[in-house]
Length: 376
Image 1 (cartoon, rainbow, N blue to C red):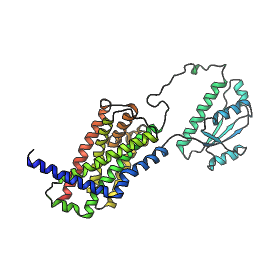
Image 2: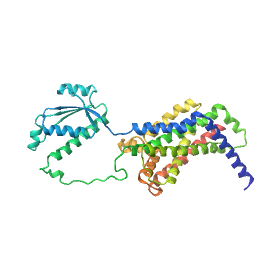
Image 3: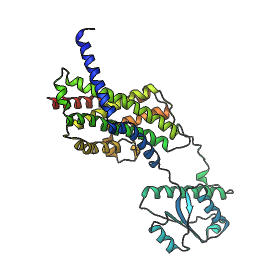
Image 4: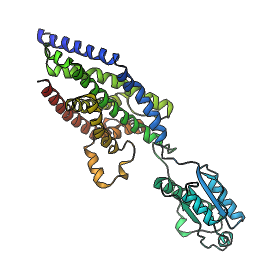
């Protein structure tokens, strides 16, 4: 090997080792790298579940018949609703719902059993606390589904022409409809985004605050070598972070891993480069660590919200769905879910991987340009 490349490689290795030692000595960075992701994974993994259970329901049964008692049993048997005292009349029931003491109020009319026997439609009044629109909508859907199921059970001798065709539904990839299987891969991506930007920006700002960047400029190394030496140790540590998060989610939340580890880590490395590039850019345009942290909130929060990590992209307005195409985390979330849940390979996720590669190249070029300008 010629002397020039060998010297450059030796310098780069020395800088990378120096950077690794600095990171390992910083207890705050170690906490952000390894402990904070596990804490966030636990919090988000449990807190983001859309499943609603143990809603407080008050029931007034004016029918007091076998049919109404069967309907009430159907409401509470699956654990979604817990029956609490209703107050005995509609006025008190409505006041309890408005006051937040009950989530749902149900009033069963006296003609319920008579109408069932004569095949007439019966209106059942349902009162919902609409402050939490999501919970109210889920509660209404539960009650409607339970009412339809119970109606089919007791009307054994009748056939509704609209219900003669019974669809046989099978769910692919998530037969049990476990909500954590959707959220936890998104949380892995979310945590990687936060950690990669925070750690890389903190590493650069620390050099600026301590004045070691100026000292490095006096050594026979180029700005490219300085930047590369910062990226390599962070990338290695962040890959370890991803491995720990993946093992933790598989063990704690039982999220399946059906794909290829090499594909998963290759895609993760691409996004690590994206996150580190964002962090270096934020550090380059900021004067100190406090300013970097505040600026990161204006970047990370929109990136997370538009990525589909927390809520499905389909639930967003059309404008924000189009805007999310400019969000690199969107493509990484899509890749992680496809690899973990579907066992997808490069042949299935190559459009998202290509988009990630473009983002990585552009953001790395922008951040390195800004970094080199700062060193001049």
